[in-house]
Structures are given as C-alpha cells and as structure tokens.
Amino acid sequence: MKVFISFDYEGIGGVTSWAEASGLPEQDRLATEEINAFCRGIRRSVPDAEIVLCDSHALGRNILWDRLEEDVTLIKGYPRNFYMMEGIDSTFTHLVLFGYHSPAGGGGMMEHTYSGSSVYGISVNGEPVDEGIINAYLAGEFKVPVSFVYGDDVTRDFLSPKVPEARFLVSKRAISKFAGVMLPHRELLNKLEREGEMLKENRGTLLSLKVPGRMEIEFRDALQGYMCSVIPGAELLHPRKIKVQFQNAQEMYRYLMSVVYICSGAKEIR
Image (cartoon, rainbow, N blue to C red; front, side, top):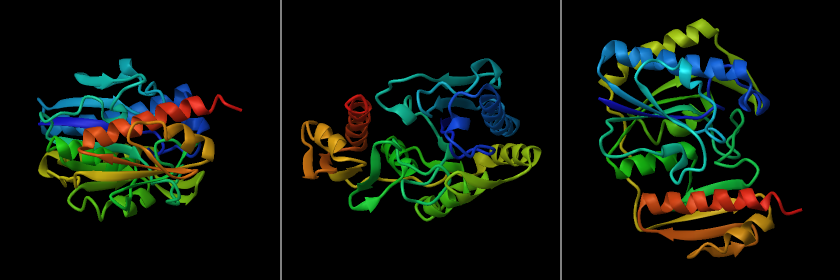
C-alpha cells in the first residue's frame, strides 16, 4: 500500500479565510494535526504503508515537517512542474485529496481554481473542472485511483458524482465564501483516524482523461489572457480566454502550470 496525499488548505477543518491559510503558526499546527490523525489511521490498519505527503497550498510551506508522524515523506516548496501532484507515479495505490475546495464560482468556502487572483474558470473537454478533477486525471494516467476526499460539503457535492467509489469526509459546512459551521475539533480528528483505517478497503475511482483533448482557461482580466496567449499552441478565444490542445494529462498539467507562472508575473504589471 502506497498512498499519495495531495494537501490543500482551504478545505480542512477550522479554516475560514485566506489570512488563516497564510502562514499562521497556530493554524499550520492544526493543519498538521489533521494530516497526522489521518496518517495514524492508515498505519494502524497497514503498519508498513508508504505515505508521501505533497504540501500543495500556495508556496508549499504549510505542514510542520518536524511534527509529522514518523516515516511520512514530505514534498514541499515552490515552483514544481507538477505542483499539487509532484512525485506521483505508477507505484502508488491510492490518491488522497486532503483539504480540497470547490471550483471558482462553485459556492463553497474559499472557492477558486488554482489561482483565485487569475483564473475565473477551467474546462477540460467541455466540462467544468476543479483542482481535484485535474489532479485525478494526472493520477489516472499513472493508473492511480482517487480513494479519499476531505473538504467542505460543497466540494463533496461537486466531486462525488465524478469519483463515486471514493470515500468522502466533510470537514465543515459552508455558509458563505468565508464562513462555515465547524465540527468539534476532537470529533473531526477521530473521524480522520477512522477514515485512514478504512482507506485500504477502498480502491476508489480511476479517472481516465479522453485524449487528445482541449482545455479552456478563462481569466480574471484581459492582461492575463493576452500574456498567456504567448504559450506555444495557445489560441486566444476572446480577451480573457485561451484554448490549448493536449495529447496527455502530463501535457495538460504543464500548460496549466505555464499559465500559473505567467499570471504570477502579470501581477507585477500595473
């Protein structure tokens, strides 16, 4: 059993705002506690399980390395060509989407898609996608199924029809973008441990990306669209939207990361 955990911040319990997910030491401690509870459950059920944790929020500097459960390999820092999925390969048996959120416009807590300041929406082969679906497509290319998803109730509602055999744990119930109903802390940690224990019983859903395919990305403003249209193969559909054709999931992901890097530079132009 080899588990790849892709960690994001917005969907974990106790978090309601960007400020709380931006380097607060106490909040990082709570995030690490939630990860640890899940990993303890895995190890209780499968003591020799390999666990790789990919810290994938912002610059990847959120999880407290020295407070992680023993023998959990941590991938951290930025930039990374495969960002939220750096390190995924065909040796893994399970993909865990931990702390995930709904897509831009999805109505969940802190909803966005890859870059809240740049991206208005992404579709793949004509279907709106969130970060979870994009990452699951990349894992699917390596034959790794989505086995467990942890996030708010809106995230569950968006993803569950697409990965019906994955288990879900709701971390909180969304009231608005920056408000939600939290479970008691200890109760949530206990639930995470139990889900970790049950992970071995569920192989999950393997998503297969139809290729060759196309990805359309709509931006927040025309500057971002124009700058990203310089990417080889990109077509500017209108001032705020580009289209790219891809041959496989890894190529799709590289296009996406090119957009993220370029949009980071666009912020400096005023």
